[in-house]
Image 1 (cartoon, rainbow, N blue to C red):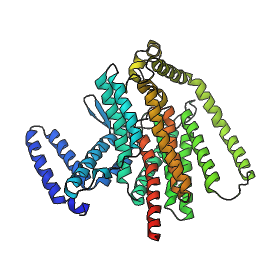
Image 2: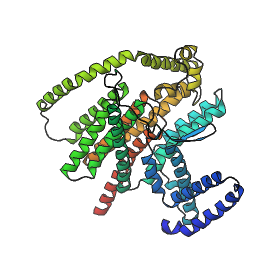
Image 3: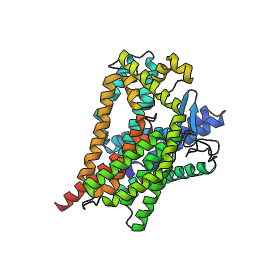
Length: 463
């Protein structure tokens, strides 16, 4: 029986009506709560019927840091709140189809699930040995399990065609372009004589949509710049492809002008990996190295004043480097104390707050600026090995998919480089368990999976 017939709109609307009526009476004296609940119920059933809408909303709100939903001590960015609704709708929908259509729950794909849940099991184990078991368990479910289910499993199951993948990529590209425009505008409104003159974020209607730190904007642009390049897979005209190249260059220019150390290192690695893979496996003509020498020398001369500025910025910002070094020292000390399972998920901030030297010099404690220090301190060597294996298997799959299906390089190469850059950035940043990083990885996984299915279907047709 067809899924569309099973998901009968009239049955669902009738069901939602009977669910909402008692709730309405329950909160009849508080209209705000009634409206919120009504909106939530209607949104849930909209996703139940058209779950791909949630996928596109996830892409639109991916880079948003503010505004966020706040309830007591719980704070959820918009993208996490939307993803929570999508996740609930997805599993309820799958269970509904299982009951009325006999659809197997095994059809839910869990990419590299055995590796992820090995890491998650160690996170739970380390939580039971932490000083605050409940808080550590909550962190494991709220951040670690949630990022996998919401930003890896959901996209991997919902994006089942190149058409849907294209829509998500277009939406992220638009957000990336808007972020780059914001960066350009930020340059125009700054004092150019200021030594800290750089691309940064701006407030929009009183909210720091891309965050209040230039690093957060650069983090999103570093991945979305290469995601834009993947649009060339669908664009046939030479003019259209050139436009995509220009947009990518514009985003990378804004990353460059952010004068962020992590941004520069990541961008250099991304461009190097893209070039090496392209000229080693895809470009089949003999390369004339002389063609690259003059442009490279010219680029060095053009970039030289900016490199000088970067050096001066780092000299003026030496406290930031010392801050990171001290956080690394705290992580190493924690690893020495509890080498196998660490102090428990989410406890790095507590370790920092207990460090008198850090608090005296920098004030409020910070989370780890780098996933390596984070996992080693919180989950020990076992956690680090299992998480590293999870990442290794993902990027191994992406690399092998790219090499085996190099005729699809216009799609696979930029998405793989975007995924790599997005997570490499987390060696020095704090978004290791967030959707703004993992959705890019998921898109690359989906692209390889769709290409594999496409080629299988073509092979079956020939038989």
